[in-house]
Image (cartoon, rainbow, N blue to C red; front, side, top):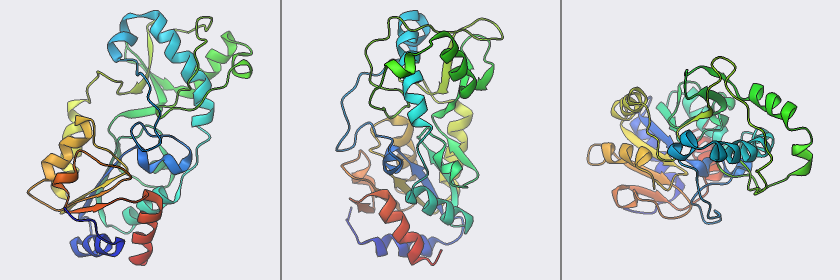
Length: 274
């Protein structure tokens, strides 16, 4: 494993040519948009609700939706950053076999990239745990505002990586049920303790297998759902990692850049003339 200049990674991307690069994105890609990451140098320790707790306990659902209700307004105000735009240019110019994102913010698609696989789902969608119907998150936001008048004005919290906010006063918050079946509503994301759907994993493996190299951007690779793709590529194709802070994939990386994603990706795209 070596820490090289940006030009070395730029050369490698150019060398593998069109459709040669599979990209795995983590929360570090969106920190420059004001969305904090889970495990970066400035990350705050926090306890995550598991999908099992969410499913069985109304009080856990109440706590989650109260915090999400406050955080969602700030989360949706996040804007595309230079790293998202650089990846979109790489994609538009045919360098990528695809992008796998662990982020739930939808910012890479907002930057204009097509064919992105949302490994952990999307925070702007809601799914019923009972009838599996999907609905827009903004619709739920309006329904929650109607039954919790004044709640947003009375509460403010630090935004968290998954779109909720760090607030503790949730006991009075009123939650609503599915409009189709009256069931339990859940954000359409992979929560802690949950698993990624097999068909999504298969599609992501397809992106990695079709590529000549794997580029990891802004991920500590602490969870198996992302690390599995690095292990899949290891020994078969070059692996490059751009991240501030150590990752679980460092020992498998051929190129390791301890740098921010926005400036590094922008420099690579500019160096390639795009």
